[in-house]
Image (cartoon, rainbow, N blue to C red; front, side, top):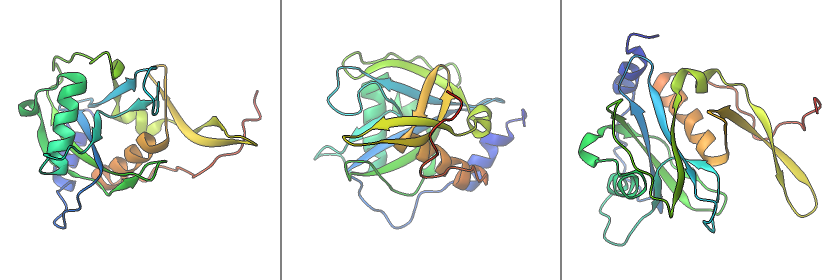
Length: 197
């Protein structure tokens, strides 16, 4: 699949939904336009009050003057990573996802140049990194422990570039594979606790 077929498939498959739903937040799933495309990911600052230290897509909450989900995604990506909105070739969006806090989040998908210059906004982002689409598609679901008051639950996660991708970000990747690439990745809601430890 090293002949740009993945990015071509995304271009052919994705569209913007005709029935516009204004989301409370939006993220940008930015894919590099190259033979082995990679997805732009960030690790949120350890000092944030919500989802600190977690891997996410650039994105955030709608501002009162944001006119569309696309505007939210592009504005937030620029604020967090200095990605120039004019470097993004918009392809379409994915179905709305609900975050743990109940917030409705709209994923917007676009292609970006492979050599794009990015700078992490230190108050929001600890790290910017890229993960191969093919490696993410092939990564097996690994149990990730989340501790609650009286029990631990194990959610499926992917390990990429020494980071753990789980929760909303992982579900959006599964959605991208399904709607953008016609690839059905096995992704249970919960997984059994690891027995190999």
